[in-house]
Image (cartoon, rainbow, N blue to C red; front, side, top):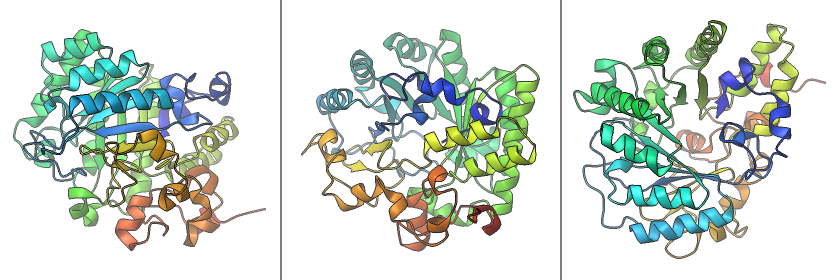
Length: 395
């Protein structure tokens, strides 16, 4: 996760993170990525049920959830363990988390346990009453997925009218004062929609957007040929930086992030050097604090059936099940080979990643994408768009 607004527009400085000692338990939410202890943010895909049919769904959601889903009681035990372990954030996801019958009780329990609770949703089920309920529970944030405007979004979602329903969900959250933002997965089919997403942020006064790079897992595997080329990726990251800067310059700051391609960090820094930015060195310091990809370390995933994964996209590897052992025990078990390797992945990446001068900044990028493309979790990430000259070590 690369905070374009934080870094490029100066919304955060190194001193902001250092002031809190860089400990997860002390850092405010917008600084968590700079923690030194990397206590895991946990994504809980609590149900496989969903009312939409998204073509790129990593969870391969379906109309109904399975009988193997964790019960509300098992979810409560999971939350107790995560809170005691020091996980700062629990992200309720799916499928569609609003289709889980125990969602409100579980959110309430997470908040009372001292965790920050957020949800990732398609937004279509957020009525005015539901938004008010979520606000009263202490939910911190609602991330609503849009992959374009109007018909483009509806084609991705597989349901006509999904766009309008999502906009209603956004409006309902705003009406009750519940922070809401957008999630957008970039690919060739919706590349031209990005300017319109920025326009939507401004028109609807939406404070946050996350632009996700495509990961080739779940139903997203079918879109591998639709991923952006390296040149297209460079152009779109430049566009995102330009539009973010424009908003800041006009006194309309938004929180803008890119997710799941940590080459964005070095690329942003190199651009700032070309622009002779006096903040470039401070940005590099923040990028090193961030450490790049954090799968298996600063982010983890619990599936609907209790299985633990390195992140929500990488389901081909399972480290254990919370029905058998607590998450905290499994996450810290150094006898699990891949999990242990992910905590020191810089020792295991191969090819151009191994020799890259930005390894401390990007952490080897996204391992799930590398394995999906090459069959080897330690191969170079094919979505890295930095040139050989840009990654070459220089004295």
